Length: 269
Image (cartoon, rainbow, N blue to C red):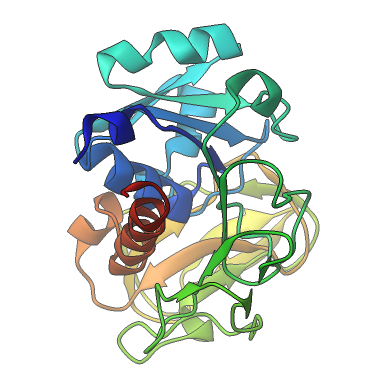
């Protein structure tokens, strides 16, 4: 890689699973100036592979790559020399004015655009539905599992949100745990444990949340989080391999590679 490319300033909005897979892919490729922004109370489910956990625990390591919580932009920029990725609580990404990024990646996956514009950087990338390439971002990356996963879209939107989770070992909606009501999420189980269909794995405001199939509890929202009816709060993996809980998924890895491709297409000239 050209030496100048490693000095590109990259802002990733969000620090959940897909954002973290993207950050790890870029970091491994030699990009050293990555800044991630998050909300004060992240809603990541696959917490073992989400740098958003650093918001609560001050640091998080995913596949040997470390992220730490930074409490100011000055603190964030100081850690790059140590090959560490800073996560800054900045829901509106206001630090962008100080950072002046070359690349902005909106990896919030809100299924709608929450404020990203094509003027935010020389290259603005949106992950999944909610963005239109050529108008509010330069490039959209397809996040829907299937033949087009990771495809770079240079004009128009990604596939619309289907509301149906991606297929894993033949299972879709049954593998996802959702909040049955509004309230505080509680669970005594840890990510990585085996659960059986029908087992109570959590409660929301006293209402039970039961597993829809046998498998490994691959993800679980942080206990104590305030949730609302229908929110994804957990994920049961029917493949039954606990190691998958601690490694980046094929989907996140593919999307991260696509972000890398988009950056090289723009700047490697």
